[in-house]
Image 1 (cartoon, rainbow, N blue to C red):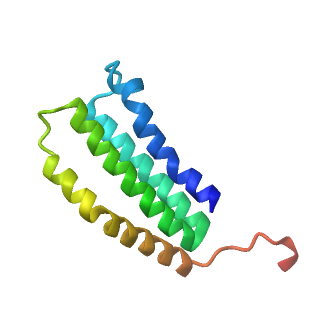
Image 2: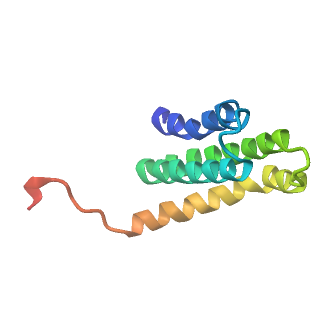
Length: 123
């Protein structure tokens, strides 16, 4: 349970460290930061779900929800004119069930696809 939790924390750490590294120094625009965080959260969630099964579904969903919730807060902090307060509030309330549903679907699809055996003795 420790490894999926550590992987789930990586995007959260990026969201917390990213603004001072990227946004404050004007290296990346707000829409680009938004895209980077969304792709990072999606990829890490996918790796966690596919690599750790049922535990990965829960950890991946919570990690994605927290990452994208923190991202909304960071974007609102750096751009007060952004009119996303309502969307951020909706995400905090309904984002976790959405993330759980998406991660459960990905986990179910992963179980349907047969994995190739890496055991050389089985051949």
